[in-house]
Length: 445
Ligand SMILES: *[C@@H]1O[C@H](CO)[C@@H](O)[C@H](O)[C@H]1NC(C)=O
Ligand SMILES: *[C@@H]1O[C@H](CO)[C@@H](O)[C@H](O)[C@H]1NC(C)=O
Ligand SMILES: *[C@@H]1O[C@H](CO)[C@@H](O)[C@H](O)[C@H]1NC(C)=O
Ligand SMILES: *[C@@H]1O[C@H](CO)[C@@H](O)[C@H](O)[C@H]1NC(C)=O
Ligand SMILES: *[C@@H]1O[C@H](CO)[C@@H](O)[C@H](O)[C@H]1NC(C)=O
Ligand SMILES: *[C@@H]1O[C@H](CO)[C@@H](O)[C@H](O)[C@H]1NC(C)=O
Ligand SMILES: *[C@@H]1O[C@H](CO)[C@@H](O)[C@H](O)[C@H]1NC(C)=O
Image 1: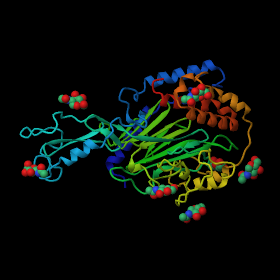
Image 2: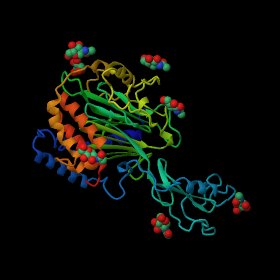
Image 3: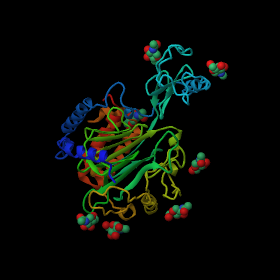
Image 4: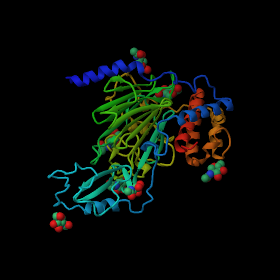
């Protein structure tokens, strides 16, 4: 049964549909762009840069999702909060966390009769939780952040992405292709996450690039945070929350104190919870998931799905859903290799799920069926993708991207050759995907 307040909220959402996403941008960059003239490419980059300058995510303190894998400058980041905890005297009556309740409501204000003695500075750094116990101010990094809580904590994050045909890179760095068009589990905890982290789930569905194609693109993404199921239709650039078409930006439960936010900017959806789990999805089919890179997310059997676990071991990133690891002869090679195509696809197919909003024709083809060694002539593709390779040497239209590391540029180049070889009209999307990543990694550009 629908609660009345929920129903009213949904009605409001429906009335607001008129103000939904502008369609204008849909194929602004690529549709009638052959990508041939270098001048046009430069123009595209300039447009994207301008867009980026207007992005709300820009700035000195970007929302956590612009931040990458930060390492703390502080050598003993945990020390201070441990000290703080040790300083708690549970017999104190001023502000115990347990009954009797905090006399000052748990805010970081000293009781006038019992001023703080240990620290004069009564502010915690950014990304911290502040509380008062035993006449003392307690600063602790928010979950998923590390650092000195008095000076500020930084997000420790790790990212996995899928784009193009789709090409995947697991959390641990395994490269692989999986083309099945059935909804699949991209990433979710195998069971549950250690407190204070909540369950999350990211699923995706690809569609074939064209009739008879052997490759596909991610066209729909479904994210579960708390009790919400956020479904993004990349084709129509529409967002559904628990099945109801919804405008973005969207905040839950409230804009002032969101535990979930869904935003849209320059072709990319940002779906984030308050635990620094961030899903980005853009209309070229690029899906990324960023999670805190901390013990609660690490380990052999903590995270499941096609994106793999987080344990710095790419050799165990292809798993059957029953937990059996598919041994890889060469984990440094892009999977599947010539020899393991069928079994690789069988393993990834075990992550197919029915539990996914059905928007269109729900029939699908799994990876094993779709897998077929189609030959293609890479000569033309190599010429088309050359601008990406040139970036390594700091020349060509993407010269500015040379500061990305060579390995990353090489991967984008390989992806581009693979894609353009299979779908020659794909060159624009490949180049654009590269540009977006370049801008993500080098925010100053
Ligand atoms: C805790 O606080 C009480 C009351 O202020 C004091 O009598 C006691 O000695 C303190 N205990 C410790 C371990 O500091
Ligand atoms: C307290 O520390 C913070 C962070 O170091 C600093 O920005 C702030 O100015 C300090 N406040 C006072 C009153 O010293
Ligand atoms: C994780 O798996 C590897 C083998 O893939 C094993 O050597 C290691 O002991 C496992 N670690 C834990 C904590 O289970
Ligand atoms: C998991 O499934 C695969 C493929 O069906 C099978 O080879 C393997 O033995 C299974 N493992 C377990 C533990 O059941
Ligand atoms: C759904 O897709 C399948 C395979 O792509 C196709 O054979 C079928 O005719 C489609 N059904 C509808 C109703 O469009
Ligand atoms: C693979 O492709 C070839 C040629 O297109 C076709 O004859 C064959 O049936 C396909 N195999 C599978 C398993 O789909
Ligand atoms: C990256 O590759 C280019 C061209 O091959 C080379 O000139 C450059 O030195 C390489 N950079 C690094 C850091 O290896």
